[in-house]
Length: 63
Image (cartoon, rainbow, N blue to C red; front, side, top):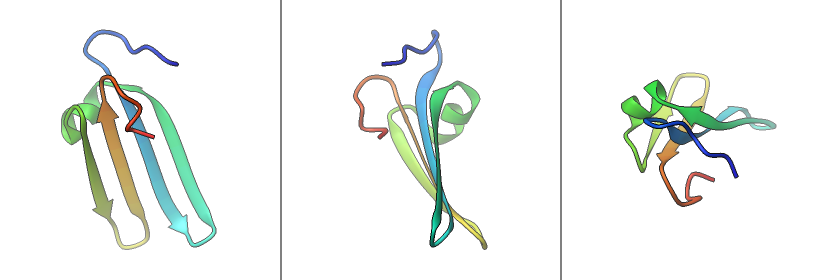
């Protein structure tokens, strides 16, 4: 279990780059979670990939 500094939230991001390639990243973030919103998820579809991001302060719903 990772504990984030004050003002930061847990960030979990996944990106589908190709049918066979999916990247995942998790860690603490302040700036990215300001854009997504605390305890919220956001999905974006770009021409070549789909990106999903979640920020949370408590539960493991980010995973």
